[in-house]
Image (cartoon, rainbow, N blue to C red; front, side, top):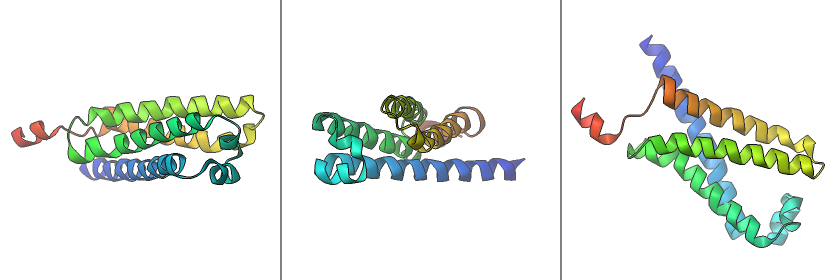
Length: 139
């Protein structure tokens, strides 16, 4: 049972790192790249107000950092769960956005990210929660 728990913990960390890297990279791109360069990669970014793209960059960056730092530093690790829930909400809204634009074919990625974030929520709440630093010292 301990080995299974250890494998799950490693899987959860891998998913958290993968999603964090994805969202941090996406946030940095949306915040730092010129809109015309972003639009060449993601056409919708050139068809919405730039402030919307930049705001999404901040949200992506916060989500990516939230998936990793609270658990890694063991400071309020429940924030990792909330970051994963926020990413689920963001991906559901992104899916609806793309469907409304007739881009349903690109929503598979959003759905995959939703499932991975759901795995983090489930794993960190039910199976392998990260204890806050204060609790680690007492144990």
